[in-house]
Image (cartoon, rainbow, N blue to C red; front, side):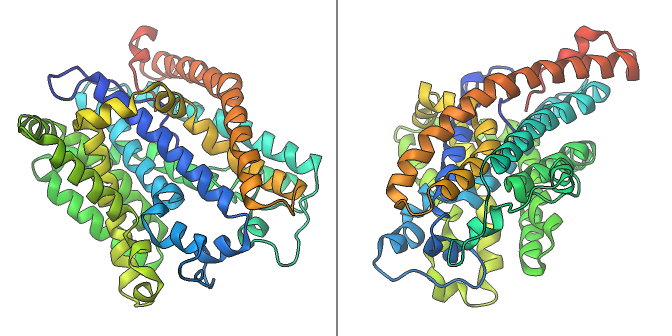
Length: 405
């Protein structure tokens, strides 16, 4: 989930820079959903719902409504990560597809862009672990046990810094940054594939969905996640066609109804595996199928954010833009904070816990953004200029082409 600023393409009459800024707001909303998701998981009952082998909640209970109704949208954390992956594929591919892309500048810039905030988050998580012991408590949330670190070692710290094949217990969200790094390094391959299938990009998206289905069916992580990035890349390569479709829709008198239907369909597909209920999910063929629908929902939401005037206005409001700005920082620091505070306050009610944790997480993420992530932007720019100068002989100015993500 590392896409913290979108690339602003050339302005057009239908999909201009303001529409691409709406993706920042969308990212901010998704980051808040992930925060709520992990905050709820400190309770044994909610943890049991999302972890293998757990029991579903009592029908009609508050937990049941938060899990098996549209209220799931408030805490659909894994689904929000899929949305992040689609956004990453889309944003990173845009400058590549425009041509004249400087790969010598891109690789050092991208690695620094990811690694500096990750290193800061690992240092923060380690400090929180050292300040208060994270002793496992019988009967506590299974998720809390999984995310706790009873004994911090140098091996666990170094493993958390390994974004290719590490272990991320001290900061659980780093598992997805691993896939961001893998995709980032493999971007030339994704770009070549997208250019080859440009005329059939819709078919390519269908093939990616089959890949996700195979990944869910077999438990193969690379099939489960990498095709989701590819969907974003294919959306970028098909942006001209998408822009024309958006223009046609917005020319219709009641276009807002079409966009309302698209957003509703996207949101429902995003959480379809929860809406069908635990009984339907017990069928062996159902979970892989519904998992493959999650990227479809994410794609519809991204296109709606680009095309719908109402969505654009909402997602570019100041609070949404601010949430988007700090979204990567929030994603990196919130779980270590949640785990630390829960060990400090093991008996406080969930409602009080959320009232304490969520504001502190937002404040901490804001500080982390200005102290760590924003300087990382500057450092990554310098790394890109160094790469362009040393590796390709390109003048430094040419290396500053906007590829922030």
